[in-house]
Length: 255
Image 1 (tube, rainbow, N blue to C red):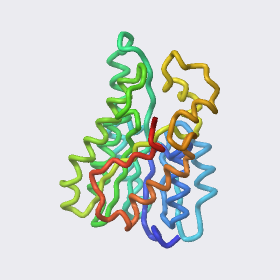
Image 2 (cartoon, rainbow, N blue to C red; image 1 turned 90 degrees about the vertical axis):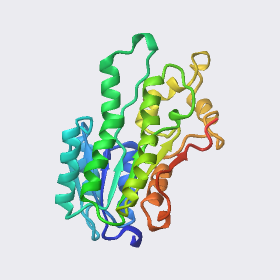
Image 3 (cartoon, one colour; image 1 turned 180 degrees about the vertical axis):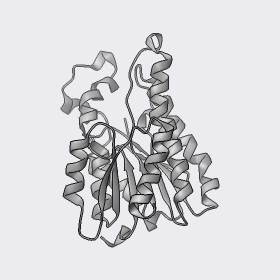
């Protein structure tokens, strides 16, 4: 519990899947946490009720981070609610698969609004209220560095996130704030259950899930959400004090 005791965190997209695992890990390490959600109010409130107490506060906040004004307002609300902000974990994101011929500007706008602009403007607002020792963790994906059939729009959005962190690092380091990125691979969650099959080339689709998991990483399985959360916990901890601008692949050596 001592590692993050007294620290105040905001996790976007924190009501389910990887986000919920991150919330649980930060709370277990002693942090007070604001859980952002867009649709899953019931799950967010249940998670907050489960974790609140033992010297930490856990609260919820509705916001669509794809709206820059809403993203900024969310960060400011979290800082006001908690009496400051030390950690931002920008986890919210949306998937997209589709052939080039069918892509529309609306597709592009929604994916980049959430996956890129949402992370950028949440970072902007967080940096404005953080002090020395602030920690920001953004979310990319293994998709930014592998080729996946009909996945160009999503992959481009996630590649942009790593470029953002790399170039923000020296600016934020001048203020004592570290910014890093996690890039998960296949992870067991409701999102992966819905979209995992799309990561396989059409010629191989139809294989059973256990086969897909065996060929997705060197470990022969999908990651557990808690394993992604552990990487985040490391990056926001004092042990990562000299790491900034980096993208940490948490993909089990994607094959």
